[in-house]
Image (cartoon, rainbow, N blue to C red; front, side, top):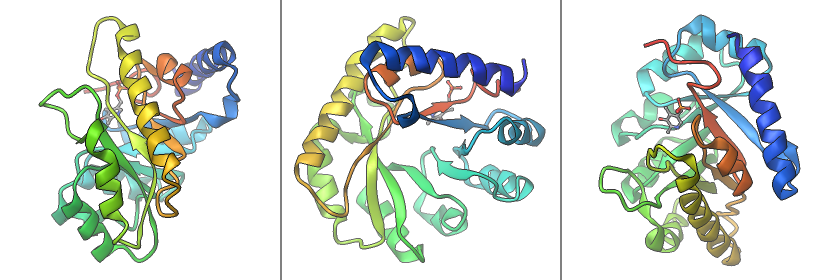
Length: 225
Ligand SMILES: *Cc1c(COP(=O)(O)O)cnc(C)c1O
C-alpha cells in the first residue's frame, strides 16, 4: 500500500470517529512515525501531504531530518537522554517526552527559543512505562515554571498494548481528565491544549476521547524492519 492509500483510509476512520462524538475533524493532526521505515518512505509521507513527522531516536531522527531537508514539523516522541538534547533541540519542533525535571533543566540550558513540550504521563501505572504518574502531573508542571523556555502545550501518553483496543479507552479518558485539571490552573506557561495519544491499533478510540495529535507508524507508513 502507498502512504497515500493508507492515509485515505485513516482519514475516513478519523472522520467517522469525529462524527460519533461531534468533533471538528480539523482538530486532529496526524504524526507520521517514520522510525521503522526508509528515507524514501518518509519522503513519500511528505509527498502525500503529511505535515508532521515523528522520530524516537536522536541520531536516526537527525539523519532523516537532513535527508528530508527539515520539511514538515518534527516531533521527538521517544525517551530523551539529557546529554542528547543539544544535538536535537534545533531540529525538533515538539518534544513529547518531558518526564523529569532534569530534562526540563537541560532543555532550558540548550534552547535558543521556546520549546513546545508534552508532559509524558504514565496513565496505566505500568512500571515499564515512562512518564509521570497521573497524580503527580500538576506538581510536576508547577515546578517547570522556573524554566522560561519550556511551554507545556499538552500531555502525551502511550496506552498499554492490549488485544482489545476498547480497553485503552479508560487510559485516554484519564489523560483527558488530567488535562482538564491542568487547564483549570490557567498557567500561562502551560496552556495544555493538546493531547498526544493514540497509535496504529487504538487511534480511533483516542480520537473519540479527544486526541489532537495521533502518532501513526505501522498503519500509515508501515513497518519495514
Ligand atoms: C513507535 C511509536 C509510535 C507508533 O507506533 P505504531 O503502533 O506503529 O503506530 C507512536 N508513539 C510512540 C511513542 C512510538 O514510539
